[in-house]
Image (cartoon, rainbow, N blue to C red):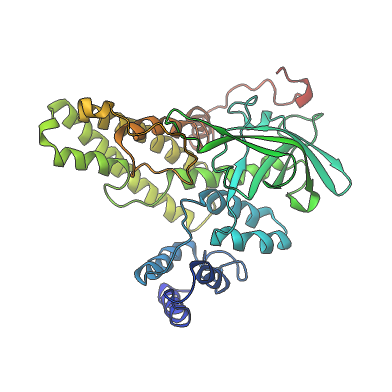
Length: 392
């Protein structure tokens, strides 16, 4: 499959499916069925088994035609985390059931991993799943859950065997967020909004048909999710001066009265860092085009979080007294994070979450040191101890 062949397919598809005459949903469904959704996925699942690198050609051709997209920012968890996990470990029935409405945006997904009692140690989770015939009965609490208030489905990791070491007794499920026993509560943030949530699971019945991977292999399946999550957060394609650096640079250019030599030095340093990060992301995407995401995505995510926080702080300093204003503390439950449609105060506060969400920077540095740099791992005294015997 070549770029020219794919562009010809897009042209033929557009000739037969005029986006001006079809609803956005009908157009997206037809695009998926034509194998023009994610072209590197298998035939029948929205793709054609083509090289991942050709996805950009398809997106550019549809964008040039003014065709509707699937609002990827709104369904990022489904696209970037649930879909590659289901593709890698799901049954054929699961792939056919979940991937199409996930890609079209008909079903929003969230991620039930983090727990208040486990901190950054996912393998210490305590949410319990007990087998009952053809179902599993799940009880526990999850936290820091983006979009749970919008989601129809969740990727869920549970404890199914407390008698083995913590990494061995986990199992991965797809959880219906509308099922009895699922309660979503807003988790109000420093911004005043509640895009994150607490999720309480009280004797939620999940059919075994919604299990992903084998019983006890939840840690293995979750690693696929986490590697893709970090790429999704830290490896998004950006033009030069895209993202936060573009906002700060525009203020610098438009407001010469705010400039000082010290602020100029810091802005230039961050501009170089942003450009280096952009180029590193491009290299990572080229590597991803010929293989699965690896631990290198953790480095991109750490760098993204730190740079966002530094730039949002610099923007406040540049604005001086203006930066102390905050437009609105109204409690909202937004559909997506919008760094660019809000003021500098919002960006400064919201960026604090970048080093927590998607894996804390501290945990990611451990991954980088051990899996990328090959440094000795930290001593882990709980590695061979049954989960039920661990102090909590």
